[in-house]
Image (cartoon, rainbow, N blue to C red; front, side, top):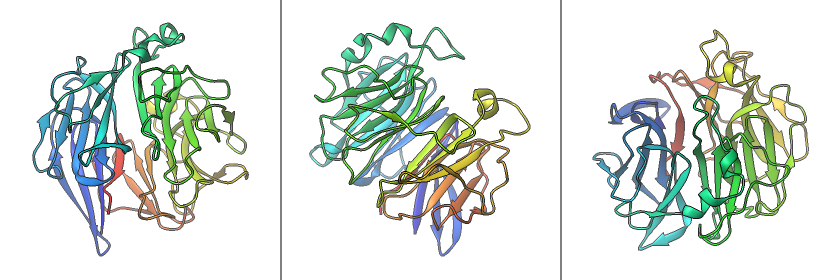
Amino acid sequence: MTTLVAATGNDVVRLTERNGAWSVMQLLADVGVQCVAVDPHDPQRLYAGTFDRGLFRSADGGETWAPAGEGIPHARVLSVAVSPSDRTGGVGAIFAGTEPSSLYRSRDGGETWEDMPQLREIPSAPTWSFPPRPWTSHVRWISPHWDDPNLIYAGIELGGVMRSTDGGRTWEDRKPGSYHDSHAVLTHPTAFERVYEAAGGGVSVSDDSGVNWREVDDGMDRHYVWGLAVDPADPDLWYVSATHSARYAHGDRESAEAYIYRRRGSEPWQVLRGGLPDPLPVMPYALLVPRDRPNELFAGLRDGQIWHSSDQGERWQRLDIQLNGLLALVALPG
């Protein structure tokens, strides 16, 4: 059985596969959900950030929800993550990123929150700006480290990848070789020094926990990159989705002209076809390789389609479900 949880832009829904058949259940409705996260050690604990109604939390697998406790002053929560390494009483530390760009942490299941004000003191902070709303920016992605609770990465749209090595007390500014229009940042559950970035200018990677970065765009003819996934069993096997520009990815065009790319080690990026529309008319907003199902890949498209590959993207099949939209996709731990 496979269980996924999706943010549709409005709702949180649970997708469950049993014997090849998928079912859909709405968990949280009509709150403008933008992002969703699950505690990697406790599938009952779910968190959902919204555009104007703050953060919601569930401790029973999404059956019931409650607003997060006091301490997050901004109503737009555009990123949320749960640390696999920073845990108190069996509960993972939760990080919530907001617009305007601020980061908050809770160690009690979302009951109370602490600000990380030093993120706003980074030298580049005055230059951060989100083009559709140029007077502001937001924390687009949060990636806690799998092994070191003091290592935290925050991707600012548009600002870059920021790193803390002391649990969020202080922050380092973006580094050469990484991109500034950061859309997704991932760490790896076994290759602890690897950090990956998908951004509005291309793809970058760090092999030393974010100290140094290098661009890895060879083989790609599209460089507005959005979705990012890494195989949990192989840190050299990863995937991105990309198109020509933000207008193609998010606009009202008839075709996004997007591709999903795969990279193996030092080989150039390769376009994945195998049954996918060529090119994809709708942008893949979410790519996902479940931690307990390496070699598999899910692609969630902006319009609510979900495609699945069981062989590292060689062949694809569209799931027999259609959501109202899709912004984010996570797998519940087995």
